[in-house]
Image 1: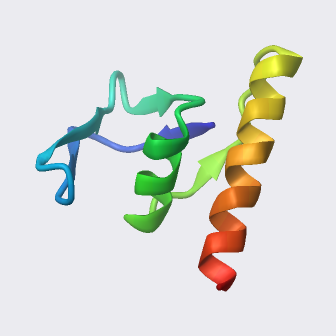
Image 2: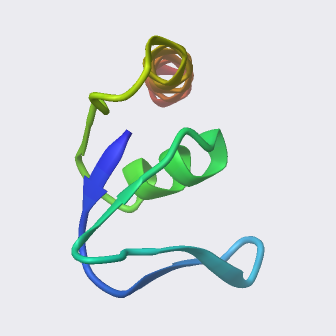
Image 3: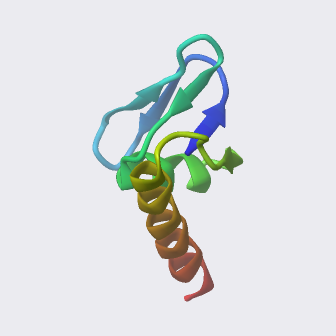
Length: 70
């Protein structure tokens, strides 16, 4: 997924940086980063990368949605 933002997003639970935005965005398939950014209120968009990358993002997106509904 691709997220827009600036600077560093801090993971308070792990007490370390979750990610750093480069040139105003970050593009990742890391489920931990995707979950953390969504919980922090960032809106993500699907990447226009490879089919495997897009499939990984869909699974991560479904997991976040299911967790939020519980």
